[in-house]
Amino acid sequence: MYGLNELQTDLDILQSQGAEIFDIGYTLLGRPIPCIFKGSKTGGQTLLHASIHAREWVTTPLVIKMMKNYAGDHGVWCVPMVNIDGVLLVQQGLSSIPEQSLKDFLLNVNGGSADFSLWKANARAVDLNVNFNARWGEGAQNVTYPSPANYIGQYPFSEYENMALRSLTERVKPSVTLSYHAKGNVIYKGFGCVDNGKVCAQRISDSTGYPLLDSFDSAGGYKDWYVATFQKLGLTIEVGDENIPYAQLIDYLPQIYEQNAHVLDIATECAQNLS
Ligand SMILES: [Zn+2]
Image (cartoon, rainbow, N blue to C red; front, side, top):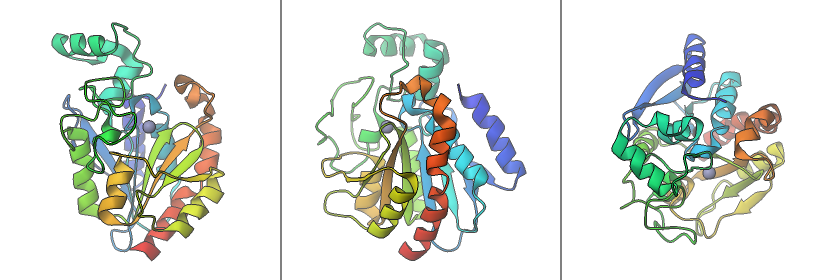
């Protein structure tokens, strides 16, 4: 298990090693959302995030390890756990939810089951990665009611977590963004007919061994919004073997890290050329 306590310990270590740690906003339940910065604020910037989907929390210790080992000079911003409320719901169940009315709501949305281990959404049962303003609501799997996954929310950017990520992105104006998800060992690039930074995308694909796929029918994701808005290189990286259950992906973290060990070096170099 890797939860909020483990994350806090690692943030303290990163800070003691010279990284900047600051909050970009709050979750629905008022938990501060941390961000890590390393490198130089001049030149092209790289921004990555993880755990926007609750059950994919293995991506948090992955990006933390990537940030700990990043020794380059180029600027990197990392939001290691966007959907903190959702991750804690997956890991701790309803005991992580403070209010009885919200517990009742979430239990109902989850079909009466107290097992939240496959939950993707936040604590309002909105799937954060279909709530961005890019073909919002046009995804084939989108639903328009609260759900453990795929609920688009009442309107684009209705969720605090996404507002925080949007503000950070607009401030940093990164040239490369990496959205870490699980699972499948593939990388999705582009949005609609926008497909910039192809050479860089291919280098990252070659380095990880993950095939590079176009996501023509993607909608409402961070990568979709970023590519459509900034017209730079946005990648969604899906880590972990498709056949491994979500809760067991943490056992494969060493291998997953090895596959992604050079991604930040490549991405930050690409960011200089794309800025
Ligand atoms: Zn995901």
